[in-house]
Image 1 (spheres, helix red, strand yellow):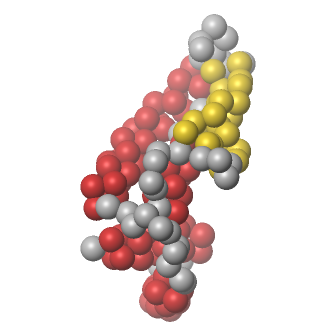
Image 2 (cartoon, helix red, strand yellow):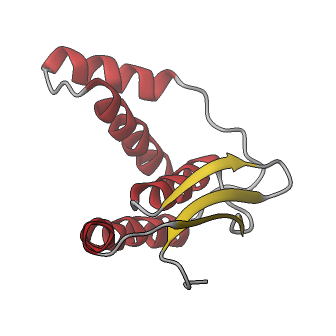
Length: 130
């Protein structure tokens, strides 16, 4: 099951990059997804972690729309860079999804995924917000 989720993630990224849903592109994307080597992670991902990450993606979509409207209605002139801890024992695919979720919302973007287990996240905020 985990391998299938990994292939689906790779195909999703492929389709986002190519923006082409032709049969040839689907075949190429599937071939690429299957031929890419596995992450070689020492910690295999758990189904529970994948389901939680997919739920977070589903929650991030309405949150992104809300933040976009909020930015238009109320100016956000403050900004800072904060560190967020990478969740423990994450596979590379789940770390990618974590970065995607953070970057998908308009107020935040991941600047760096450090080797010591932290994300550097740039965020905008209204003055006075912490």
